[in-house]
Image (cartoon, rainbow, N blue to C red):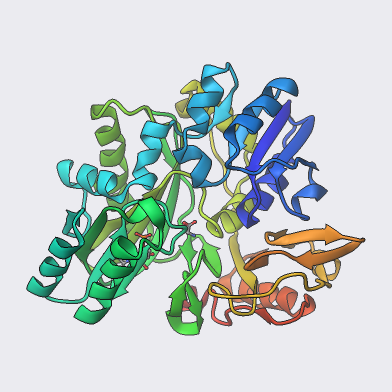
Length: 422
Ligand code: AMP
Ligand code: GLY
């Protein structure tokens, strides 16, 4: 099979790594990829939002399967375009991708089908949003309706913070059209976890629960990032908790989509807040999480291409998905100053030394090759994933790997996985 993978982050490197192990694969193309994906296939110089060029490439190369990593092409309708050109592609159609591309759409769906989530109001007028903030108790969470790369959410502890979030999103238009509407919701306490699931429109099968570390600094402090590290399976999602989540959130979401006439084929990402009185949905995404994919894919035994084909054909019920009975943890190494301001172009060394250990993998993200040198090219530069039998083991192995990698002004969190030890 000829497979085209779209995207360029650590998630896509993990996907390329897993796809490259498939017995079904003959040739892998990655558009645009990074220096790490080039180890598993051919990088193609087409950006992931250039839908027309991607379609032309897939037609010309007679691609048998396209796999979409990021949300932007999904919400722009890449799956609809490929399908109408007779091309096989893994991911939800545009209508289904609204679960992620519009917070108002997903909150309305949650409310209509009584799926647990924070109480909320939506606004298209900033003055009404501000009046609302002045009339309720804090803390509150202010969210841009559209896609904002994880940066459109403000957890406001004070009225001032909430008002300035409205100003930033709706008046200064920091996220452009994505902020023309907002959701303001109640603040939820608890511990966060991510459950990813394959969905073929009729059946849904969950992956091991993961925990991301969204804040930039140790102890969950500082600005939100795309994610600074992750581990799986997350102990907070015990068997009992998972069963409850399936009954109250996962199955009801599939029923809601069916009732709404939405044929969801792909991955549903359930961002959850778990507390003593149950789990609530913080957000849906319609793709693998990053960095979550970097700990989940290394635990997957089954051939990913077989699963993706089963999803596309609506035959997910017939496939047995097997997982390794291991722990996985990854630590993201970022450019100093990420997620705000950072420099790129620094030489990276040490990756080969880390990969001498058979249970350690380096997934590159913001990297590029120039004149035979590997250079940093983004905020999240790479991540070290370790596999092992306990969280103690994978924490020490991942950080041993981190210690071997070097580039100027690097930054990482020191407390990835500490919650799993509690
Ligand atoms: P979202 O993109 O909606 O998942 O929000 C990003 C992050 O903001 C989440 O991962 C949480 O850490 C935080 N967050 C979002 N909604 C809430 C909420 N209602 N209560 C507390 N924290 C929240
Ligand atoms: N790690 C969070 C996300 O991928 O949205």
